[in-house]
Image 1 (cartoon, helix red, strand yellow):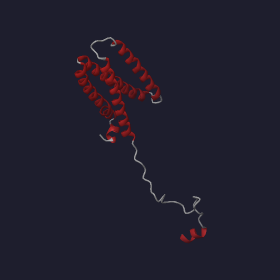
Image 2 (image 1 turned 135 degrees about the horizontal axis):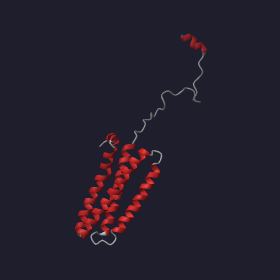
Image 3 (image 1 turned 180 degrees about the horizontal axis):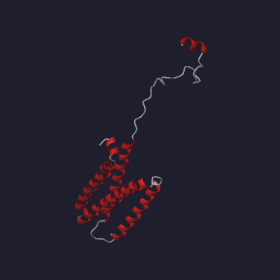
Image 4 (image 1 turned 135 degrees about the vertical axis):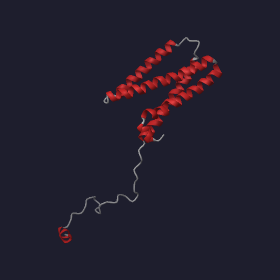
Length: 165
């Protein structure tokens, strides 16, 4: 996808740059954790990746729609979304703290890896969207440079003006 295509369809660009790589990493970690730690490892890694996709995805959608309604408050909305993610993650971790069905290490590794992949995807997406071509500079300098070294054009001689008319 080119930067122009991503700029025309930001939701598709965000999905291709963030959701798909995060899900792929989550699946790989679930398989590896399943081999290493059994079923609880696979469930923990899958849940860790799912939490990242859900929290970051919902935050992205909420921030996008709220910033359309309140264009003067994107920073406040982002901080509110961050607070909501912290509280939601805290509640989720409290609910599963003693579960034997979830390997906490696999959950933590998948959540951290998923977060890193998601953020790298966002950095990549933003880098493609805001990339501006560098202006071409002429090494000889400006073409319309005045002859006067002070930078001012010489005053016109009235005799020269009358001769040309």
